[in-house]
Image 1 (tube, rainbow, N blue to C red):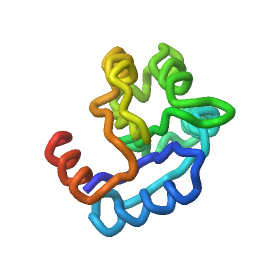
Image 2: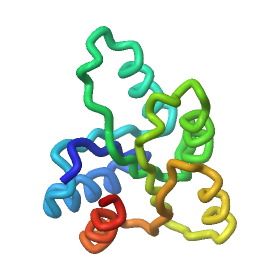
Image 3: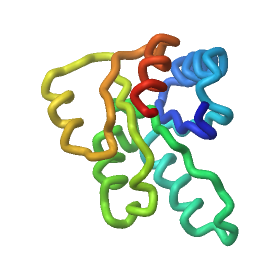
Length: 134
């Protein structure tokens, strides 16, 4: 079981379903959510500049691609930069409602992206990811 996961998605129903499936599958102890890439980067910046470094960081991020304010690709560009290098052990799974072959290829350019899966998240996906992360 993972200690902490970050789900980044602008759809509150998707976030709720994601949380339910993760809890029922005992996949993670804690689930943090952000509604877009900018909110997620703000979360990481808060962790970086917090006085106490005891903050746990997520081990896995579920990332939607199409969001207002800052989408998934823009988040990945920032998150992959030297500015966020202290978080480079965090793995990212892209969750998208459409699986475009071009998006699949683009996702492979980011070293932290370990998979590209179709929404919605399911228990069998989490089992697959458990095995992949071991």
